[in-house]
Image 1 (cartoon, rainbow, N blue to C red):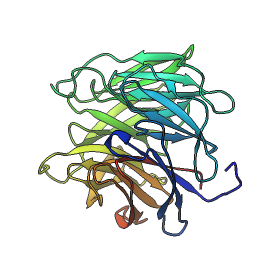
Image 2 (image 1 turned 45 degrees about the horizontal axis):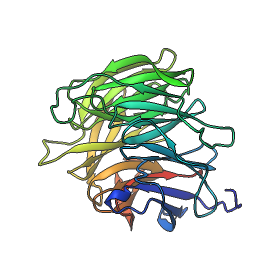
Image 3 (image 1 turned 120 degrees about the vertical axis):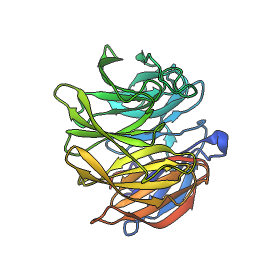
Length: 345
């Protein structure tokens, strides 16, 4: 931390259009993982997804609006301070961002694009985007897949590739940068109508898991970092039976030791626990998420955190090291919460 205060912090994104406070900063209790809000940072509309620089000194946030922007904040004590001006992503509705090859990449759901914004040496954003990749295609779901909807972009563990997950085209694009612009190396088709939303890598660097929003499943994949190839292997449901009503999976996380995978499902409002098996997953349990409409989940230091958008809270759970099953241990109010990211331990 710039002020010498080494207390660990978490940052909570939200939808200001739905009453969210912007970005909340919370301290993290080392013994029980409890979060305590210490400040709020407003001024950016709908900072729905956040990412920290590897050194934990700079926080980046999307502005998930039709005008679409990304902003940087200097992490200074209990209140991140704006670090330069927000930069247009030249796309509609950025829902996710990742740091890759000296750039911030944003996945822009509304326009079905991925944008690259260069980073300066001090962590500030360049004045404008350096390139935009426009996805093409559609899917069979008449209401949700009329065209491309990029939902996530992130680097692979090797740092050689960026992967973009597109709900509208039922595909994952493996990308590089060419003259500062995202460029497709390979596009991998998933099952039509599955609606892929987010992808998480296994720590072995050889497997990845894609959570599908439109059919409540996870696609297990093999990942070849040498060739930038994602190969779907099998698809498993996130629920033990047919859902009673709405069931839209959202977030996915993998345990640091690679033994467990967790997903969150909105509508059913549950967390699903999977045991990792060779080239597969086995659903072992589901537990209530402790709120309504869990938009994202994060695993950190033996705890799982769920950002419950519609109930306006963040709940956290101690993870059983033997079974991976979450046990709820606390919550805090966070109106229109959308994600939680953690500073260095």
